[in-house]
Structure formats: C-alpha cells, structure tokens
Amino acid sequence: MNLDELRAYCNAKPGVSEDFPFDEKHLVLRVGGKIFAITDVTSERLRVNLKCDPALADELRQLHPEITPGYHMNKRHWNTVDFAGAVPEERLLWLLDHSYALVLAGLPKSKREAIGEEEGPC
Image (tube, rainbow, N blue to C red; front, side, top):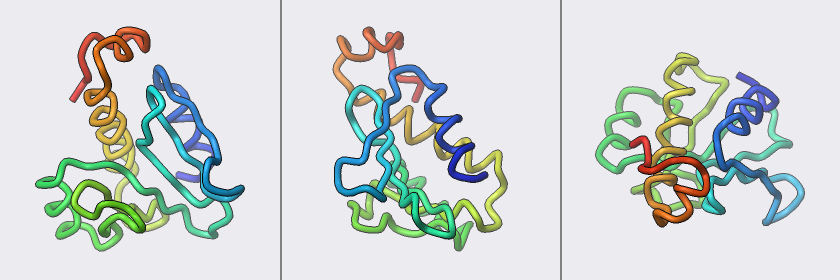
C-alpha cells in the first residue's frame, strides 16, 4: 500500500477529513475531528501512527516487528506501523479500520449520528 492508496481508503470512510496541523509534512486523518492516523508524507517508507486497543497493541508488536510503540504518541494506545514491511495488506486495512472504529466509538453520540453511525463499529 502506498500513500495515495492509504488516503483513498481512509477518505472513503464516513466523516473522514485530512489536514496538516503540525507542519507541511505530517498528514493527519481524522474522524469527527479526532485523529485516527498520522503519517509523514515526505518519508521514503510509509509509516503510519494508528490508535489501537492497548491489549491488542502489545500482541501485535510481538507478532510483527514492523509494528512498534507509537512514535511521539501515547505508547499504550498508539502503534507505528511500517506499511512497507511484511505485514499483509489485509492486516494493514484491518488496523486502519480498527483505529477509525476506536476513535469513532469515542465520539459523542451526536457526532456519530451526524457522521451516520448510531454506534461505533468497534
């Protein structure tokens, strides 16, 4: 998966927006105004910070050397995932979906309803 494919996949989800709030190289993907993914668009390797359930985060880090504690993030709740590594694409898509779902589920009901989700899909 490359950066364009990542953006297309995420932007196809309800309520997703993207911006560069920190600088011109760190793309932030949000749902309902809350971050679910961050990546450096200037990096040669696609690495993405994704939110993750803490118990699952530890398990994923043990299974995949390409999944590490979130760089510059709360390491209990965020992973940095090397999308250019050996993690299968279906797992990468699942990790994106999981991050999106966690953030969506944490939004107030009114925001979820505005996005079109009665409850978060988590």
